[in-house]
Figure 1: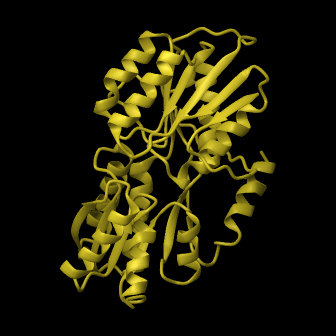
Figure 2: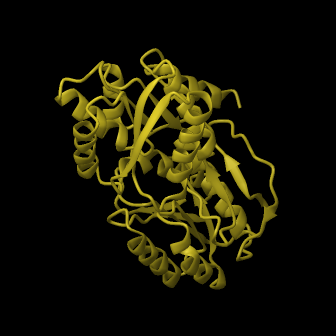
Length: 328
């Protein structure tokens, strides 16, 4: 196995997790590579961000079992769909065999996905889906269900009353929209006395997220909880709450286990996070993409699931997942 990486800080994480596979129609690849052909597969994230480290780790580790497969990581400099399209077009021109994408926007990728498939390049998605395109497979979190479960947790945390707002990291990202939709539906259904204040979009930029969290606290001084549906939203809000001395008055929760997010939980600034099974997401993204390149059938959707991390399991959840992998 060969690999090339751009815009990525690697880390070593050894875990594999049991996947919940959602039954669906099967699809077939754009190409028909043989098992012994030299194959190049590329992973394209939304942009440069530490959250994708573990996804790439799983993708890369899965590839190590194949001597004839080269894997690459090509990240747009920013969370920008036009930059992402350019990265994909460059990969098509270079003649890679398959591309898996974490889409910045569903509709805006229709043309470039068509271009890839018409050129014989297989295309799948991970993390966020792009169902308006002809992508051949999606692997990742069932974001609506994850958002709904998070809404239930927030309702319980607030004792079914109070007010909440959402920090969203990109209004064009289908996966984030689905988390928001699930969250709001849960609040409406299980805690109608909780007032939903607003959704503010920081576009995947941590500095902007901090500014928007400050604006939320100024606009809604009696707000009870801020929820981040993308990786930077929770820690951005937590840093502002801590700086303003509001720990215990304004609750914070969110998605994903970035290092500073975990520290905020240890310090009691954040109550919980929804953790996606990122390593397995990357591992399965590789397996699905390779299968489509070889003309094999794969399920259209695979749900890798989530778990909730709090102070009581923050030091054990990773070990528990590793033990689960060893029992597979």
